[in-house]
Length: 340
Image (cartoon, rainbow, N blue to C red; front, side, top):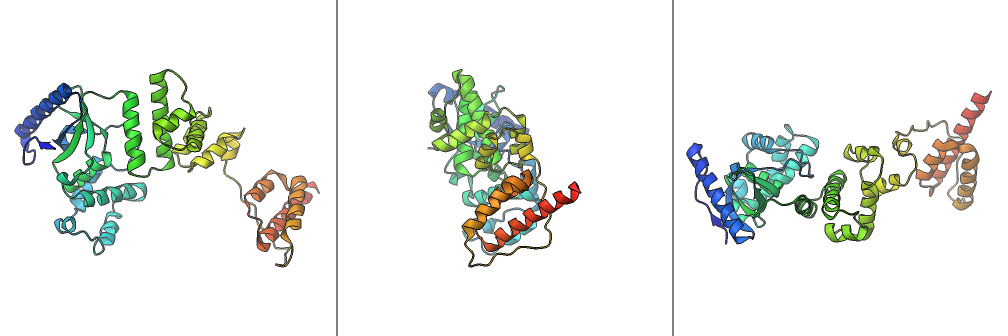
């Protein structure tokens, strides 16, 4: 059963000192029991982990500001339906937040609506005691924590670890929290797994295998293989491109990890200029012979840019085949002009 330290909100220095003493007492009890100690704790005594790989685009100060500007009204929390007001609420919020910050805040607001009050939180956050013994560091549950901030609550249900987790345990807890609760972007998953793999290898003093990542992270074997291939890529450019959003999927990253010249592969491709159409294909024409002729011509006449364009093109319609031929004619024409 969850047991509260007390009732009411934390107000003033005396209240803060009272809660700090209560936190000390709980940490002591949890250490003696050598198990997970679940209690309601004041949010003011919990600090977020700056190294959490989730990389939310909103923080405590931003959520507090949104709570002042765009509070969740009491009648909204008591009504299960959001049909009448949600679109207008998000439209108002979008005046202050854009892009990922808006997406992250929206997910926190929706979570707050589902939680409503601290006693309805099904899965408590996980914390451990800092060196001071009075402040607690959050290991898992950043979105749940921020949803309580948005609700204006003083307390949050928390599991207190009896001792600070090691790097591997912390990485594992954060991976499970981040990956299983809410979908991450590819860059966040990659960054999360980089931390998990590095922590495991440092703890075990050996190189992680695909099977070991499958077991530790709970992801399919083929996905584990691709992640390890990308994580271990020697070029710093790989990580830079992932974290900057230039690479947006695991498949794309794995394909690029197999090329010899990553810098050239990531360079912006120059679009081929379209000239006037000089070739057309009737719909009753057999496509396969045309495709073979086109591919053969491209191999000897097309050049690298043209062949790359051709590989990306779906040659399964008359329009696509005609356009590809026209591009080839344009390319050869330019070459003849330059030779002259």
